[in-house]
Amino acid sequence: MSAISFTDLLGRIVAQPSISSADAALDMSNLPVIELLAGVLEPLGFAIDIQPLPDNKANLVATLGEGPHGLVLAGHTDTVPCDEALWQSDPFKVDERDNRFYGLGCTDMKGFFAVVVEALQRLPLQNFAQPLIVLATADEESSMSGARAIANAKTLRARYAVIGEPTNLQPVRMHKGVMMESIRLHGQSGHSSNPARGRSALDAMHKVIGELMALRQQWGQRYQNPAFEVAVPTLNLASIHGGDAPNRICQHCELGFDVRLLPGMQSEGVRSELKQVVNSALHGMDIQADFVSLFDGVEAFEEPRDHALIKTVERLTGYTAGSANFATEAPMLQSLGLETVVLGPGSIDCAHQPNEYIEQQQIEPAVQLVADLVAQYCLK
Image (cartoon, rainbow, N blue to C red; front, side, top):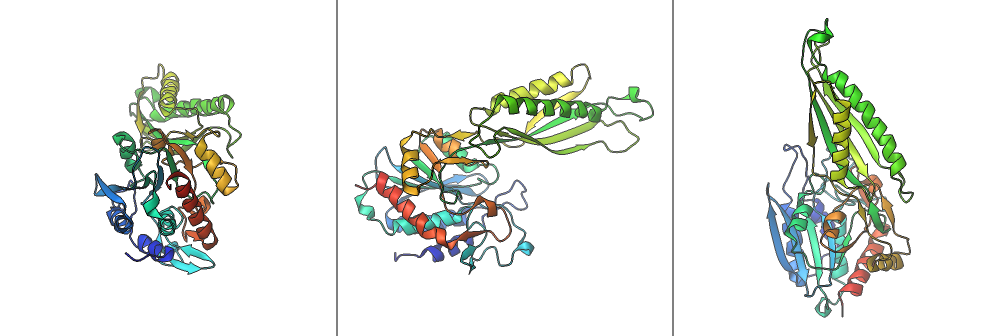
């Protein structure tokens, strides 16, 4: 196969819609992107493994070379939904203007795969001493089911992993975890003229919210990490729904919230503490509480500063590895024993926004960085 340019491949990948969403009406398959990447990597000598997932989704594990100590270049193939009316150009067609590439997924994070292929085309791929694995996953923007499947299978064999999320080419060795939770309270309806005729779920939720706010303050005193822009864990009270009429005692009330965990906090321990606080708040009120995790969550991530991969990317980029407030698939790859870093072109500030773009001036440095990493860990 003749070489394909960065711009051509980026245009082809962006042209394949691959939106993932909890809303079934918006959700799409990522298979066209997976098959496109497989068709580009296979002629370069990669062994192709397309791993099916539910709902017509798939992961791609493309491997070149053999050995136990290789490098994984990882990214997700899905994007968030978009409102085309808010875009100045077609979100599914790359538009070059203002020294930028505009298009849905250009920075988060289809552009990374085009960077990887451009770098590979410049390298002597016949000289590999350790394997290079290009990992392309599904549903990072919704359930992270693709990365979870990779972690659960435990078949990925490598030593290092670079996840090409947009970090402006500055290495990230830690990020917060995220949980999205719901508390649903059930009381007893009745005529509002006599509160004794019912048990108000809304009154009970008022008490629960007060205890959650107190817990949030306790967490801020208990857990702190100045490496993060927001140095404490956060608990965001996001939505509340309850009741059906002003003259009825509220029977049902639901609170939705998220928690952003610092490294060192474990989601199951946090869930246990939340349940304990809520049950204590409801003691004696004869209110039933149901706890629902709205998705499985992502654990906080931290790679020790003295690990070899961190030292390598700091040397190659000239930046000290830092932190991010957004979550990635890093904990899943780290759980397989891979030293892991988040590092890629583009800015998270324009991800999930209309007119998403990647700066053209970042492309060549990103290509060179990927080539240097492959040379460091895979070439003879």
